[in-house]
Amino acid sequence: GEPGQRTKSVKGKHGIVESRYVFGADDTVAGTAVISVPQGSSLDHSGIQVCIVGKVDMLYDSSSSIEFSCVCQELEPAGTLSESKQFKWQFGHPELVAETYSGLNVRVRYCARLIVDRGFRGNTTKDVDFVVQL
Image 1: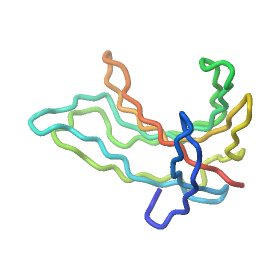
Image 2: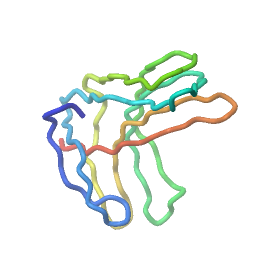
Image 3: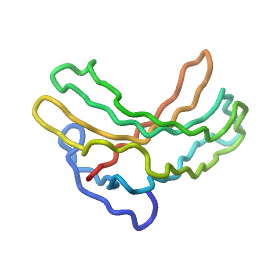
Image 4: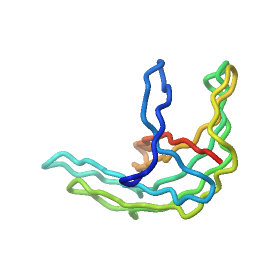
C-alpha cells in the first residue's frame, strides 16, 4: 500500500490482530518491495517479480488451497544484487473478483507475493495479505 491508503484491523494467524490495506475493484494496487542484502554480501538471482494472488484456503485441510487469480510483474531481470534495493510496483485494476472472506471452513484471501528466483536453490517468497471490499 501507499501512504494514506485505507487500512482495516483483521484477525490474522493465531488470533493476532493485524492492520491490512484495503482495496476495491477499481483501485490500483501498489506498493514497495524491499530486498535487503547484508553489507559485504551479494544476492545472485534468476529474476525478481511481484504477483497479486487471489486464493481460496480450505481450513480443514491446510494443504488444500486453490489460486483463482494470479497476475505478475517482473521487477528485476536475472543478475546480482550487491546492495539492498527498493522496487516500486503497481497493478492498475487487477482482477479482484471476490471479497476477502473468512468462515468456518474456507477463507478467500488476496496477497501481494514477492518472488526471488534463486535457480537451483529454489524460490524465496514473501506474501503480504490485503483486504478486498467490492
